[in-house]
Image 1 (tube, rainbow, N blue to C red):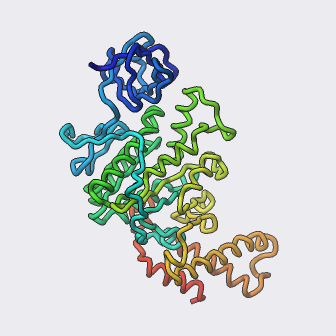
Image 2: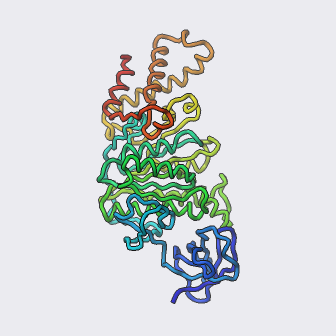
Image 3: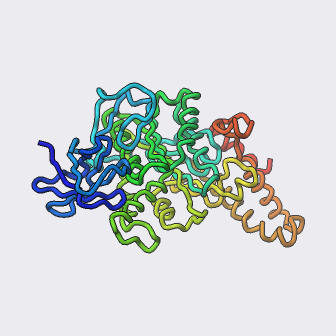
Length: 436
């Protein structure tokens, strides 16, 4: 017998449901008796007779006094070869024009529980991206997490798309892209780019679009993460997991927190922000069966890098590529801030002695360049010492060197994209530092 409950209150997307006897389990899927297209996800049991649920469709069809029925024990999503090249929403439903996946294997997309018996770092090899500034300052290490941080319109999505273009050519791995709170136009452009470059055959896309409810935006990330873990654990695949935009994931959670009546933290975000983000990031770990390498773009509201949500995300990543509006406006692409960009993975053990020494030297030169700019604005470059003038010129050459035409931006820039191997990149940096 299906559980039947009565709606007693509606607050935004949060619905309170009264049950006389048995209660539904957390993450159970409910359906409105009045409109079968309206579904709800059970968030928690408020007490022994009341459950809190999310209105996933943000529909006005629900009314106080109407009834809902349980249709599934929990959210399930399709997985397997049939999902490759397809586009899904947060509920695992196809939103493209492909064939039905009713017969595909399905898995639970519920809360992640780490399997302590199968822990392990997985792979630790460096994946070449062909993008000079990334391969040099923030090596793309298998099984780790990389963030691309910046305000609106500085090229985060373009850089994520370029990484997908350059890295996803290996047929041995699987790529998952999850769009959280972004424009549908950007998703269309990404889909078309992947299709043109013949990369869709190993890619699955999940979208929680800007126009959708906070519930759908929040769920899209956890749904995609569940699919990534299935490919890792059941198919022993190395997974590339792209998120655009992880800040919108926190923002969606904050909207839901407000509807639940929770008291905001000092920074204005939900009190559970740290644990929500930690659970999400923990679900993208690696083990002895395979790796999940994550690239996450991070929107910076009002270009304020000290925003509490941005700081929290920053702390949970291994490497952070910082994009600058000033650099973008000067015409340098990708607009990476060479001084602010950091990585805990640029160690001698990981990248080797030659690369490590070059990074150390370049950071010294760029820091000196930053200090000298104020002096030059007052006295002019000609008044500098020979050594300072030499270092200043080297810094300008490095800034120019790390600019690079991107394949996915060819139609916008009119320049043919370039792929530079790691060895070629190190040779180029070495020549500039040596003054050749």
